[in-house]
Length: 235
Image (cartoon, rainbow, N blue to C red; front, top):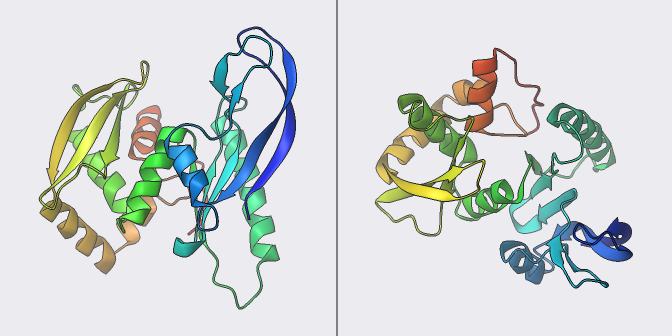
């Protein structure tokens, strides 16, 4: 079931205080219109009562696709650090596991930090693609093109909708401006080969991307910083 609550907010343009209804969770199997609203950037969007400014309120949202048995936590890192978010996420997962009946298959759980990551992951899951394999491909593309695609400023996003039977299309996003700068093409047959290797021996990719936040860019940036990824083994 989708859940919404009333929150007090201030307009970012004029500062006017007001109470608005915002979604805490959406169940897209029961209410597919909310999936559409998310894709069209209308979810948790507000119009100010005073100045009529239109803006989106970024807050934690739980995306639930019951048909595919997956939960995606969108937890924007605009209010606290990612480390704090991961600590909060771990606590929430412990509560979820404790609440599940013993005979119920636990859902896959994923974590994203912005709307772009959420939409990309939604399309990957709906297309039946394996996100760790996709992120590994991004990882190798970055590694082979570090001067051209430094992970600190460039983000690779899989364009599932425009990919073809022969090629996967990756958009290069400028992290600072949010602009899409170019498109990279990757043979789909190579994706299948990596996927088959992963299915035979998943340990390597599980070690690189233990989850729930599966991100080639984050892994590379933390490798450069010489830090271990503070991640959980939620599957």
